[in-house]
Image 1 (cartoon, rainbow, N blue to C red):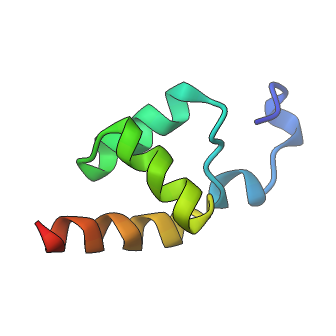
Image 2 (cartoon, one colour):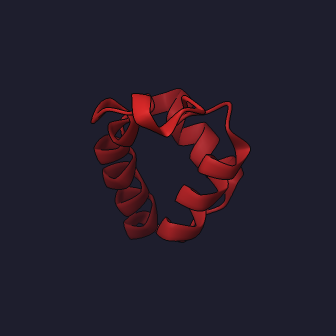
Length: 63
């Protein structure tokens, strides 16, 4: 993510940055999974937030 907030666009919100631990941790907390599970889902499904949220829901439904 760009450090300069003036250079942000809609794409910043649509993708989860895998390299940013804080962002992965925040996403994990928001969705009730562990950061390691989020990283595995990113490797499997890519870093699109909507796709990841659907994958998290599917993961929780399987349990």
